[in-house]
Image 1 (cartoon, rainbow, N blue to C red):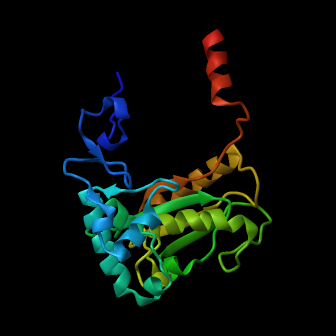
Image 2 (image 1 turned 135 degrees about the horizontal axis):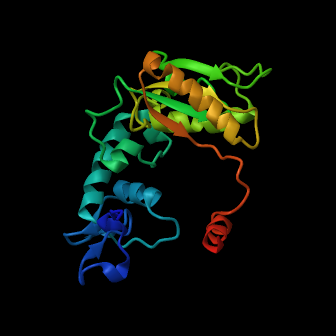
Length: 237
């Protein structure tokens, strides 16, 4: 029997113990009383509002979030360029409470997508793109030119391994020290199962050469039927 693990913060309201408070900003259960928003500084209120769920009226905030946003405010002020632009969105490691000791050092992540671009957060101060492989025949695409098909692969690779170079390290990823290998699967549009297989075969062939430990595939496939249709057909059979 498979085991389903559910985070406490994701439990339905009906499953929560009576009287247990929930922070309206992060949705996590709180063992301590919520801090009234009006008791916080104006700067802190603005920062919290920038990261709260849209359209939600925030009257109180959980203690964990208050402490998190206090640390965020200090970091924002240390980066004048970000703070002066009223940059209130928290970087991913800070939002998730990531341990700075684990930043992907020595690990390579392979990305399979429709295209890529040499984003500064991947190549400065030194280039962490160990390899780029274009598996599309007769396609002259490179990493040097931004093309319509390159935005998605650029986004996924930078979200996962960007070091925040453009923001002096503030808006960095969970693995800002990881190396990356970029595998282009198609020109644009639908990415087929055959495209994905071809990319994975290249990754498997070169995994030891580049120490590839993680593979990200943000792409589709050939199956046009919905999951529900497939499930019903199997049930009938």
